[in-house]
Length: 130
Length: 428
Image 1: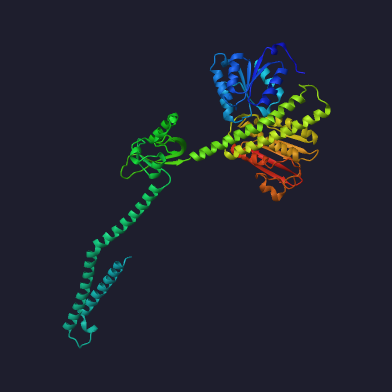
Image 2: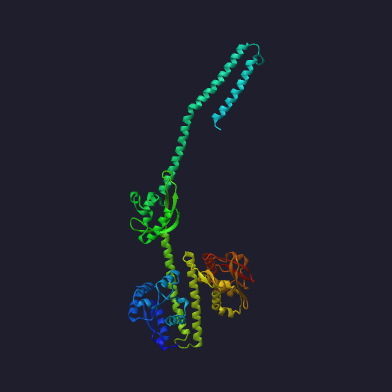
C-alpha cells in the first residue's frame, strides 16, 4: 500500500480535468499517496474551488469546456493568493506553442499524460511541494 | 539593303561606265563607230545618251527625296500602331489581372490601382487613392505596418510577407504582400508596385488542419491515457495485490496500450510534418543521453533477443544544437528497427562521429537487410519490405524519420544487403 507521511497529509492538491475517468484516477492515486485531494471539471469550477480551498498544488488540464486551463491559470495568477500557488499542467496537448504559453503564464511544469506513469505524476507533485 | 539602294548602286555603276565610254568615244570616235556617221553626228549621239542617263539618275534622286517624308511617316505610323497594341495588351493584362496591383508614391500612398485591387478592398477608385497602403492593416498589427512602411521608405523590398489587411466592409483578410521599387518615366521620384495575393482561404485551411490535429490529439490520447493510468494503478498494487494470472493480463493490456500510444504519436507527428506544423525547437541536445534513454526503453526487446549493443560514442555529441525531441524520434525509430530486424543473438551498432565536415550518427544491424530492388522505396509512406514477415510495422517510421531530417535540415542515407544487414546514417 501507499506510503503515507504526516507532512504530506496536510498538503492539498486540486485536480482540474474535464475527463471524469482521468480526474477520478488522479484523485484516487493522490489520496492513496497521502494528499488531501479535490477535483473540478472545468476551469471556472477549478478557479472557484482554488480561491476558496487554497490548495498547495493544482494539476491542471488545458482543453476543457466553459473555461480552459490556460484561461484559469491567467486568472489565478492575477489573484493575490493565486499568483504563488504551484501549478502543473497535465495535458495531452504537446505542441511547442502551448508549452511555451503555459510556462509564460506561470505554470511550473508541463506534463504529457501519455508519457507519465501515475507514480511519476505523484513524484512530480511531491518534488514541487518540498 | 533596300531596293532603292540597289537601284542607286546600279545607276552609279552605269553612269560611271557610261562616262568613261563617252570620254573614249569622244576622243576617238572612229575607233568605235563605222564611217557611215560623221564624227560630229557620233558625238551628238554620245552626248544624247549621256544626258538621258543623267536625267534618269536625277529623276530617281528627286523621287527618293520627295518620298522620304512619306516613308518616314509610314514607319512612325507602323511603330505607333505596334506600341498602341502593346499598350492595349498591357492595359488589358493590368486591368483584367486577377491579382491586385497597386502603384504607390514615395510615401507609400496609392496613386493607381487595377480593378482586382478595388474588388479586393471593396471600394471605388476615389476611395482608395491617396491612402497609405500600410494603413489597411488592423490596429493590432500596427507595429508590423510601421516596420513595413520604414522598409518601403528605405527602399528595402518587401517580398511575400504574410500580413492581415482590412477591407472596406471590415473583413480581415490574410494576404501575401510584395512591394518593389518601380522606375516611372513620367515621375522619376521613388515609386513602388505592390502586389497582393489573397491567402485567406489557405490560412483558414492551415488553421483547420492544425485544429484537426490538435483535436485528434486530444480525442485519441485521452482514452489511451485513461487505460494507461487505470492499468498502472492495478499493476502498481495501489488497489491491492493481483493474482499472477491477473498481473499477466493487466501487463498485456498495458503493453498493447503503450503500442497504441506510440502509434498515435507517430500518426500525429506525420500529420504535423505533412501540414507543416511540426515546429523545431532548437536548443542544446545531448545525443548520448537521448540514445541511452532509448536503449533503456528497448532493454526488454534487447534482452529477449540477446542482442549485443556496440556503442561507439563521441563526447562532442553531448552538446549539439538541434531539436532534442525530434532527434529522439529519429534515433528511436532507427534503433527500434535495428533491434526488430537483427537476428536472435545479433548485433546492433551505434556509432557517433564528429569530424570537421559533419556530425553523423550511424545505426547498424546484422539482420535481414532490404532487398536491392526495393531500396529506392524505403522512405516511402506505408512501404514495407517484402522480407519482413512480422505484423508489427506500420511502414510509417522511416517516412517520418526522413520528413523530420528534412525539417531539421539534416540528411539520412543507408547501405543495406539482404541477409547481411543495414546501416542508416543521419547527418546532423
